[in-house]
Image (cartoon, rainbow, N blue to C red; front, side, top):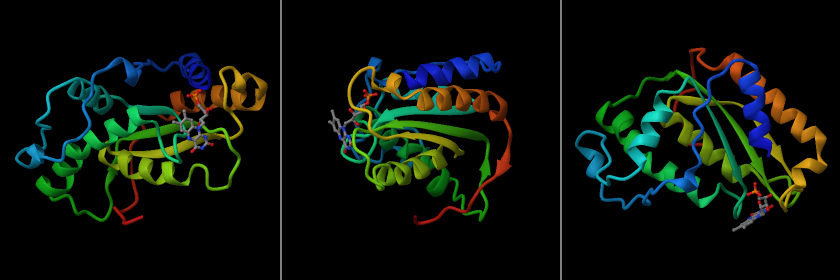
Length: 187
Ligand SMILES: Cc1cc2nc3c(=O)[nH]c(=O)nc-3n(C[C@H](O)[C@H](O)[C@H](O)COP(=O)(O)O)c2cc1C
């Protein structure tokens, strides 16, 4: 629901959206066989390649995920791990050790968790930072929603729904702006 609101905001702001629902695709987990060592191409051939290409051709990326055991959903984690092939391409093959990486796309995150702890999103945010780096993206804004557990819960929080719409608008305005980012770090 929050993502739908954000997409509405983005479309109202003039963005063209290519929606990807990960559960609709067949993507194997990374098998750590490093077939990508040669040229950065993942050796497992499935729906990953088309998702990767769609992400890399986007001006901006918006990701929505529930909190599952203090990190992202398994579907998203599988995609992240398969993007290790991009990491290999960028840092092993490309030997891209420049202090400042070029950021070509901005990313936005919507996450929902049931509990209210201060650290609820810490694990996810760290994974997200390094995942986005391989997509030459940086987290521009995030909507982190606590206290959501059951279907429709988001509707009880008009402030979350409003924030999602506004974030979509912001997404439409900022997608495509290029800048340089932080140096690669060890988090
Ligand atoms: C497998 C699983 C793991 C979960 N782990 C957490 C957790 O670590 N912390 C938390 O606050 N909520 C956790 N939850 C609750 C979900 O984050 C919560 O229900 C969320 O609102 C689901 O969002 P969705 O309906 O958009 O998928 C978990 C739920 C499931 C099914």
